[in-house]
Length: 396
Length: 179
Image (cartoon, rainbow over all chains, first blue to last red; front, side, top):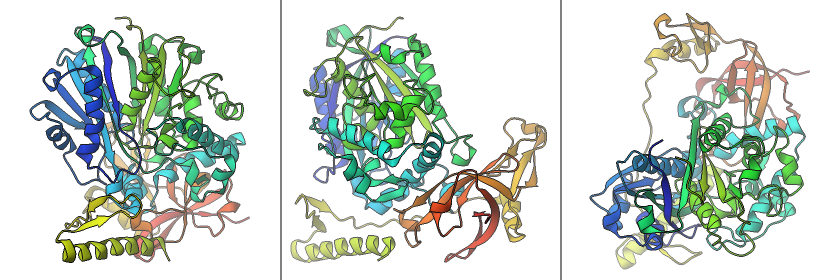
């Protein structure tokens, strides 16, 4: 396992259509905040890991561009990509480098500037994210289209209605309305969602996360130096990682994401958590709701509900504060926004700030056990990362 | 207006604006009407078209001309690989052989693509589905149907070779069997 690693500083830009900033300026917004929060200087950093999916934005070497702008040229650095779970893989790469003894302090920044290209181009880039030759070239799938294949299968099998999916969007917009960093900090109703146009039947515009620009950053430190930086670290307890086939046709079913299920079980095992009754061992979860159906499947893949029963949590409001387990108090990808490479880092920032008891009134989870979970999926279950973060130092 | 025409019209407007700005202030900046912020209209355009190697899968494309959809099969284990691939990772020594995919299958799931990628924006809304074929191997393809509201999971479908227009090349699609 190596050395234990903690988050000692967090930064988060305003998410949205950020036409006012370049990629580097956007990244620096959260880098500066994270360094200020950790109260460390540029000299203290051994490694910079930049999470960026790119393609739609103009800089093909985002790591060196961001580092130069931020005064970090000369550091060991790399850019990491695993589609929508890019941010989580960036955290894992930095965590592993510190755990191995190769670095003491690392900066992780996830950044995405999606609005540098027109929407149809962005739709094209994300649609190609799967198996380009066999499933895009001839059939033109889109990101909502891939998830719609899961939604259709799930809805017919378990008798789920479009209104049920819209209820997920309503919850996430409700919490986003209290998050000033969110892309859409406003409430919506089931009716608003039901009236929105289809983007990939049965998914509608309001079932979908938006095209968002944003950045998020964390400073990670080894257990050997963490005490010099802060007396309230948030520890990375465990990271589970898995993947699945590039071709969706090679999946045995469309009722849940097997990669996410494997990543969750791996994380629980590494953390020494009991998969049965997992919700009692968590204060909150940030899950990958790129589409409303994805949040319902996440409940099941994480073991919050049995297969086919995730929708009951939605109908009963069990994932609001006060329910079984609060989920996506940030507003989620759905309403906070989904700047692809930043999302996983944004989840880590949100969980750390939740555990510190620092987020806005009305969306702060009660912190009892001192543990939060991040579920970050890349593509359509092509990659999956599940991480748990704790206030108390994990077992060695 | 098709989604293609809308997308092109948007860019044309942006380009005309930047041309006017070049004439007036000397640089191709555009002002976002919503936020009022200044942006640079890129003067370099990249045309992206890949040239993809299919030498080892030549037989697959020949067979489309014979109206057949082929898969590969691991000689040592019998595992069917679709989409076809030239190597059998579970038993590489034995190699693979070409086999025909069955024509009949059952629809597992589908969607209707309403908002399209740029390179598909000249088509009307299209249906993409996944079928489990009689050999228990799945195929993802367009579903040829006029009314997607009639589709049901488990519905019988045929795997057919068709000519994709307007490009005019052979590919495969799924066709619901009536009745």
